[in-house]
Length: 333
Image (cartoon, rainbow, N blue to C red; front, side, top):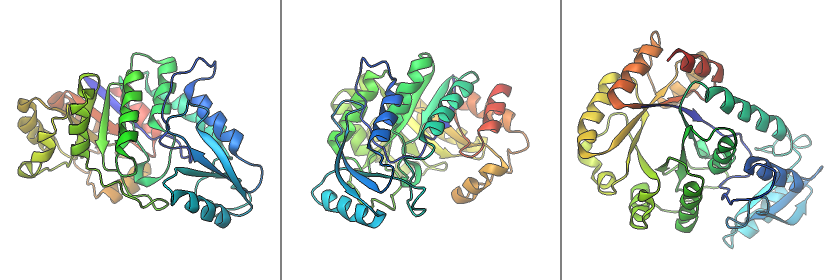
């Protein structure tokens, strides 16, 4: 019986970081940020190659320096043409058009996210870490998961894993790292397209789950697929054939939706984790983007969440822009 909180890692260019065990006194999270700080120049931009398989803290190699963002982007694209994974680090204070700021407020973002995890984990028994929502590069969910493990080894941790911009080898490495971290589950999803990297691996989540099952990963960690809030069960045959441990739904707005899904899938042995967007003025834009009508539960959120949990045995709460209300809500459950 799990109440989970959905956590979005802070925005930085260091994304898709593969986790390796280390004897360093620094936590994995600190090592990753320390490496970013080392390659971030005081002016201009450093172009760095990223090695998925290098130890944490040694994944970035500076190859070029550019004075302007346009020059840096052109250099990065020349390396990407040969299949390299490239990140650009620079000083956002000088150039306001830089879309992601690595050198400013990295330390405060780290401290803030750690404190949020500490606070919310007192009231819930599960954390789900997203993976570059809307295609915006963020700290790797594995890096953040390792940080959580530093101070809370009991809480259940699941993460999302995008297949859109990863190779099959990189996906296998991610899952292997998650197993070594003793995470509880991974939601395999397509992922939103990125404005900065429109490439598509062509991989399909259900095919990836089937492949990972054939490699035996399902015996070591639960693999989930996503499910619409109102699925057409006649059209999800490939997802069912992939034999995931279960499904994490898109945001739901009624108990009827969840009951329908649970009645169909639980008898077949699948777990169901319904996702609920917490009603809040700060989350209103998210609801609008998702075309969600929360009027049916916004006046009695706690009872609604409890009812959904009683139906499914699990629930995932999303509150991307209002942490304070999420924490207060969990304390009321």
